[in-house]
Amino acid sequence: MPTKLYTKADPKDIDKVIQLLNGIYPVSDNFRNALNKHFMALELKKGATLIKEGETCQYMYFIIRGALMGQTTHKKKKIVTYISVANEFVSSISGMHGMAPTKEGIIAIEPTSLIAFPNEVILQLFEQQFDLNYAFRMLVQQYYQDAQERSHIIRVGNAKERYQYFLQTKPGYIDQIPLEHIASLLDMQPKTLEKIRKQHADLLKKDEETERICRLLEEQLTRHKRYEEKNISLSSLAKSIQISSHKLSSLLNNHYQQSFVDFINSYRVKSIREQLAQPRQEQPFTIEALAYNAGFSSRSAFYSAFRKLVGVSPAEYAQQMRP
Image (cartoon, rainbow, N blue to C red; front, side, top):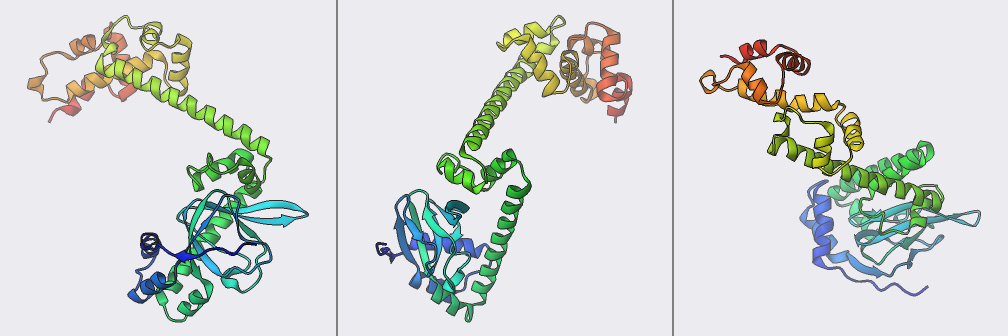
């Protein structure tokens, strides 16, 4: 294997690590100086092997850009054991600190920029720097919590839950990392992953379409005050936002959990309540007149809708609003 070319790490990249560690425990000047002195930089091409199975890992790595995966072999089958991305630490799990040969290889999934800190220096600093011991303990604790969650979801979660887990823990990487690697990590076939990914994309499009229609509805009812139209109908409102009556009815039932009548009346009642909340001297109309102006065509329909939506009669609500 070609010798890896380590170079002096960029101070800006070192600052990223220091900021991360500072978020766990304040980094002392001595520790900061050790990081600046010993951190080295390494660039890997896509598919390059950082560590082979059976080798000894001499460094703790921090990913500046790109992504790495742990990979082990079982019965001649390559299995992805983890995927680490930018702003995460990575090293041999089975041979941490170079104390034993690693059981998993570490491979660059895409062009990857790393900074590396020698394990021998880490072990020396463990004896000298409390902040390193504390920070490392917290990092290891977080790693094992993440590993426990990953193993649990892969063991008991269904394929969709495993896919959602990856989206949550590695946001933005579903389009960057080859699907066969993600499928291996999530213990499913690539075809299954592709199918779930398409279903998820279709669902997002459906959600986006729902949001778009809801915005158009909101505009019709708040800006244009369509609820004031006494003869407003499902079909006329649907036509104004250029969807079918069936689609609007389905949206109201499933998204708002309301019938068309209750949906329109909710806007009418809201308008009336806002006016009843004003000082009495600023209310030139009777309650019945407010109801008529808001779109109700009959007194009985207004009183019934108001009590259904508010829980009290219009008169009782007006009384509650008075100081």
